[in-house]
Each structure stands twice: as C-alpha cells, then as structure tokens.
View (tube, rainbow, N blue to C red):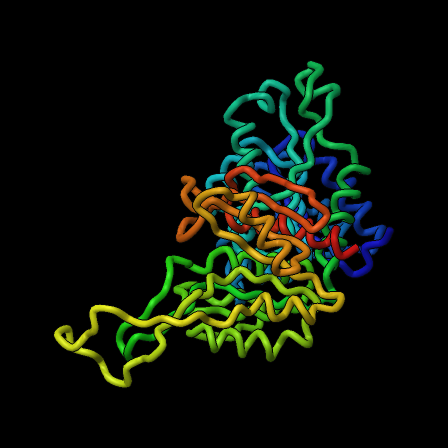
Length: 396
C-alpha cells in the first residue's frame, strides 16, 4: 500500500523510543507521504530536530510561540490528513486526555479534525498504572486511536508491556485510518437534527427538549468519512459543523419540505431530528393575550417524514433514531419494521447520561437482520463515530 502525497503530521515526545520516530519517518516518506514533524521540548533531548528535518526535507516545528505570519497550530492542524504521535509518553497522554494545550503538539491536536493516532511507549509499571489506563480509555472515548505497546525488553532492562509497537502495526493503523477517512467518499449523506417548533402564535410554540447534539455529531462523523453531508437542522444553539451543507428550518412542515427536496440526491438518510408529532391546527397571526388564550388547543398530526420516504427508498440506507422511556427494545423493533429502516439507534432518555441536552449517550443499535449491539455511555461524538463505522460495514 502507498501513501502518495498524504499529509501526515508526526508528533514525537520525550521517550527513549524517540529514535524509532526517525525510522518511522523514513518509512512513511518511502511510501510517498509528505511528513511534517512536531517535537516536544523533551523529545529534543533525545534526538535533534535536524535529524528529522534532513530525512523529511521539511521544517521541524518545536515552538508554539515561534513568530510567524500564520497561526502555526491552526495551519498545521488544517493541512494534516492524519496526526500520528509516536512515541507518546505517559505525560503527553495525560495532557491530551485532560484537554491541555500548553505546547504546539497538544494545541494542534485540539485544533485538528483529522484522525489522530497515539502510540505509547513507557516502562511496564507505568503502562499498567490505573491512572495511565484511565487516560488511555479517555483517548478512545474522544475518538483517538491508540496502538497499544508490546511486551519485550524495556529501556530499564526489565521485561514487560510498554515497548513501542512494531513499525508494521503502526503503518497498518495509519493505512486503516486514512482508508476509513474516504470510506464514504462516493456517498451523499442527508442528516436531520434538532427539534421543530410548531407555532401557537408569533411568540409561542410547541417543541421538545432536543438540543441537536446527536444529529450534529452524526453529520460530522459522516463528513470525516469523506461523504458529502447535507444537514437539515431545526432551531439549535450549535455552531455550523465545518465542511457540511447546513439547511436551517423551524417547523415540521419546513423540515418535511427540505428533506423532500434533498432526498433524491442522497444515498444515506440519517433521521436524528426530534420532529414534533403534533402541531396546533390553527396558529394565531398575532400574539394572544393571556386572557384571550383558549384553555385548550386543538392539535393535528404532523407529516410522518420517514414513513413516506421508506416507500421510495430504493437502494438507500435509512437510519432512524428512537428516544423511549420504557420497553426500549420492543418499541424500537416495531418502529424498525413499520418504517422499513435498515438501522435504528435506540436510547432510553430516562437513563443518566443519555438522551436530550447532555453531551453523552447510551444507545443500542438494531438492524433489519435482527442484530443488536449495545454501546456503553460515551460522548455523542464517539457514539456517532461508532454508528458510522457500522454504516460503512452495512454499505459494503
């Protein structure tokens, strides 16, 4: 396999295994990658920046505050197709796991949207320490790929798990992550997100607690796989995801019209929006005063967007979401069948850390073949990544 013109940012931290970063750089460049090296101050005590500069033929960056015309950590973060940190020390892993950005390498990791791979190297007792393992788990939860160390001779002279992973394993992970980034390159993914607001009058409306966070995470995860993404969003306080076509709507009727408009060009539909099931039969043209407000509001059903589309789905994948408060799997299976879905994502919104407004979720996937997959509580971004990985498998 080749890495022709792929832009890889190689981070090197202060481990005795830093010299292996030189060998890894050489192999990456032989495979055609354009490698830019970023070194921490501790790494420079093991290998001189000039060594990496000579082999890469490119500048080596070491200082977050080096005077430059561009904002260095943003420029490097945006240009990279992949960030690979090898070796990664326990100290570096702890800083990333806790969102610290006190040098160039940790800052650009927070700034990049590219896949990130971390390859730890340390003494065996350090690797096995509960705090290190907790930090490794945190990296996985936020979507960073960890290539675990191997058992062997360590710098201390002891035997144990902590030796930098073999070059072949690291390279295979690089290939896997870069290939994954383009695994939906030919797809057009249509995502709906957020609530709808059904007007009672120009001031008041009926709505629900959806924040749009799960739908936005799904849009970003699909974009990270190379898809063209169209996000149809109800009212939210979320920023527009980079690289996504955003269509803003307010009511269920507007969302139905937008979905109908873009559905013909889509190949995958992800219905994550919490569309109102009912709307007022009549909306006042002016604000109704309290003493004029009727004690009852007559409601009518809104358009069932997904049911209508399922009849003309063709070879598209239709993915729905089900937020329930009881009998989760039983009710979800009914919805999966009735709406002719390929996959449904179910969650019990009464569980702590799941459902509306929070940044985490606890979901179960059910597909039309009857397979069920349960995820633990994870950040919504990681939930979305895992769902999209499953969608890739279904598409294949």
